[in-house]
Image (cartoon, rainbow, N blue to C red; front, side, top):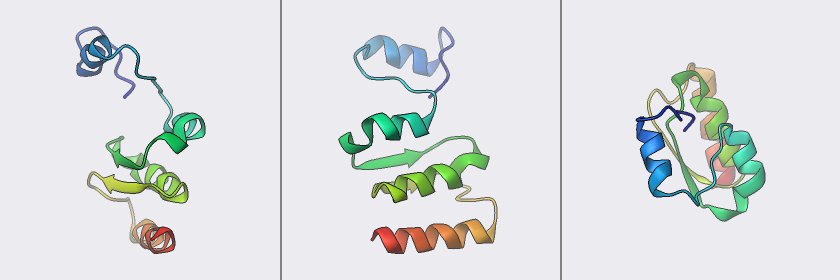
Amino acid sequence: DIDFEPGSRAAQTFKHFPEVPRFTDYRVMFEKMGKEFDAVTISTPDHSHFPAAMLAMAHGKHVFVQKPLSNSIWECRQMLLAARKAK
């Protein structure tokens, strides 16, 4: 979550868990910590659900995506193929 504004939900959570690593780019998070978690929930802005989910599946992660799942039928089909490949 990139919402670091004072009083925001994320800022309150960060105050309670100061030792938890923070990232503003999920690609960097996967690069640095990808081996430390098994699943992700994709709750990014709608236009970035597809690339985040595809990256997670490419890393072999279980994925839950908030709707809309994607922006086109083609993206949905690509996600289905990636999910089948990743089992």
